[in-house]
Picture (cartoon, rainbow, N blue to C red):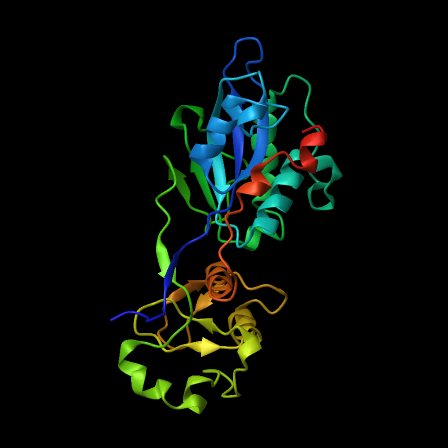
Length: 274
């Protein structure tokens, strides 16, 4: 028996990708971009600006999308990651990353920057996935990604249908008739107001429903020096939970579905050098 909800909606996808130019005249050039649909986006790049591609890739194809980082909780988070990857020397979080070395290929430099980004805050604490779309381009990152960042291969899996709103298990339907029981925080027992956007455990049958701050404090008991949790154990069902996944599920229940495709169009970062 799993969670119940009035509707289901597809999980939103936010990714930041690396293109590699296969054109002999421009071979070795790369491009960093943001997408909500990798397959569509690479077609746009190869189709030129008239098809929605960026001006920096127009007329220089074919381009191949060789890797993508995904799992961002929002488009804004992904766009910030994109900008920092494009401009590491302008990002205060990447001041420790040296400039491109003499003789260092552009592709290798971007992988070096990516390796440090995945280890730098705030990205080091997000539930990201590093996915190689072309295994023949794969290289080991140095330093390697954090243990919670999985390495994947091939195209991203289809978008899964997730519950639109947080709700209790089927066995607890009787409790839903009791507004007090339904709106109480599992951890502090205080009332959950409508604007609180409570966090719920996604595991089937788990009744956890808490204030964001309550669960954050619970998770941070093992990391007292941190402000943002990375992961923790559900206090109800004791399953392991990634904080970023919980926040994303919560946002899906309180925000309208956004396509995000307009954000893939040429935006202000295209006007700057990568």
